[in-house]
Length: 364
Image (cartoon, rainbow, N blue to C red; front, side, top):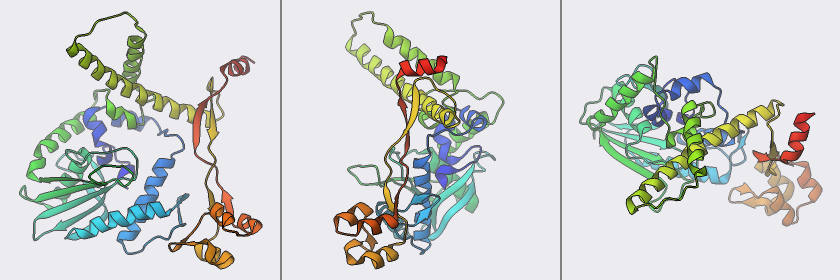
């Protein structure tokens, strides 16, 4: 999947290494610590279901992929994405490994899907994002990198059109879940030059570290000296209570600076939280912090056909089945439901614990 590429300079992380050239080097040195990884696993499952749908091998609700249950909501998103892909003309390429050789030899990744219409000299590029963070299509470095890689792979001329689309079913926008960027291979030249410059520095001996909103998803944010210093500077400024009259211009400038500082603090904190969760899971003590699990969803352990055969029509719902809790409310035998259902552990979260008790325990 394009969001999980492990290339040194993956298109999926181009927004980071274009802004912070040191991020690939730092990320390679430290393992990813993103809590329980449930969001990434869910995205991987959604991409798998989408590929199966495009290959005319649809997934049934309730199927499991790498520990993630395929839900009706996920399949609805998959069907909408597949409909958008199928509406475009051209020869389809699914989950295709491409190298952006015109950018740098180390830039490569797997494109979700693209279609090539040779008659209209148009490439349709699709990116399926199942997460909740909104992503803009226009000027998107990931899309630009994939388009440049495809153009190089197929030897497309500068006059070729590129229609790039990002589909985000879980992000609400008035215009809908699909964003579009229309450009040409020739129009991507400024992006190619910028990407090439960033890739050259990123693979060099002394890449620069730059703090910004891109830090939010950096795997090395828990050890980044630049982000740490920026966060501490923001704390120092917040603790300075010296009264100061601001002009209208100064007010606007300071609010903009504080918004960026807030983003830096959030990125730093999320990195430290992920590190703390990893340490606690290894049995180490992190003073004042612990891990709790939310109540997990109750799920069937049998296939839909077996559930319907056991309980009859009362559990059927739109070619699938209702939940175990709904089945009990509908009158299904409680013991029978318990036999073929289970409640999995919920997602883990980091929580503050009683610091007095923690200090006492730490001192023993």
